[in-house]
Length: 374
Image (cartoon, rainbow, N blue to C red; front, side, top):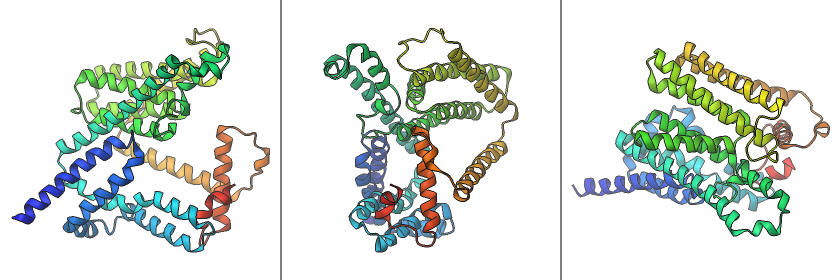
């Protein structure tokens, strides 16, 4: 009886730690390794869950791949020249080892408990977004930017502060793509878990998340967000009737317009605060962007099925694999590329593949990766 009471308390602590982890991930994610360690302790105390984990997941390569990667990284320390950097990077990779064990017990949680965890994650995203906007407002009121920037550049400065990396530069999650991924997951939760918030708050939070996602991310990810929004819209409704098709069309039009209107800021944010459609090229970008998004939405509406979704995902991964193979085989003169945000990534990927090619058997020591890329 005492053992049962003890394990009940351990499971309660485990649940509250999960809630804390969900909230901290998009807010103060530097604290998540500590929480992850405590989750692992709770899992180890419940030794029966470890046995169940091994019995159930020992043939699941997706689950056991993360600990295997961690073990291989640990072994690479043996032939790493820069062991100090290697140990630091290895500590950052400890979630690879802990995640499968720490999160296995989530399978025992009921829907109400999971919804509370999801709700805290969404609220964490909202909290960080509001903090980001409020900090920009504080900068404007505080006024120290006037000592650095000329008065004619003040508008440019604040328009840039509201987009891409600058918007989240004062947050713990200070990379726009990472935080954009959190927002995209929060949107998916709101579109599938209908009981998280009331309808009124659901709409407000969704609009806040979508606008921030668009401000944070490059165009391709913003468009991907619209497509995902379309798919979840259909998944949520399930029954294909005329009213739902019109509702989907309305949502597509609204979000496509917002995406491509704000994209004009990303092209040339110093024009004016509100774009007044006085540039033919930009008008065509907005028009064709809307047509593309609506076309994709209606196409998905007509032919959508789980099979299509599966085929699409597999096709994307096959395409990415072929791109990697081409970069692996075809020589590239990186000196011919003009430095930009995107070419830097192409060069970085190509260089990484060449390092793999030249060290194919054992790879490079974990502490030497950055030096080899440079």
